[in-house]
Amino acid sequence: MIRALHHVQLAMPGGREENARAFYRDVLGMTEQPKPANLANRGGAWFSAGEALVHLGVEDDFRPAKKAHPALLVTKLQELIERCKDAGYPINTDEPLPGYDRAYVTDPFGNRIELLEPVAGG
Image: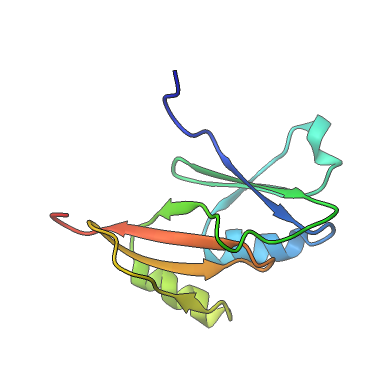
């Protein structure tokens, strides 16, 4: 039976690992994880923060995920929103989600990322 989500994989264009690091590591504050040797030559990058694992894999016929998206649980959402804006990543909002403050940001490749912060008492 399913008991947890191990990671989410998003696609990215080849040769843009530095753009991935600039966003996922430097803006979102995730830690880059080494890829296993047998997968390293495929390109892409893996990141983690807390229990969240995001794998970025190179896709030859890349198309960004504009609707489908990971939802990352965060703390200090407003600070993260400001970091995204300061780095040139616009923030979008949507209808409220009960129990959460939330915002969306688009990674350097056009993939949609949802940022969720639980509301106290929610």
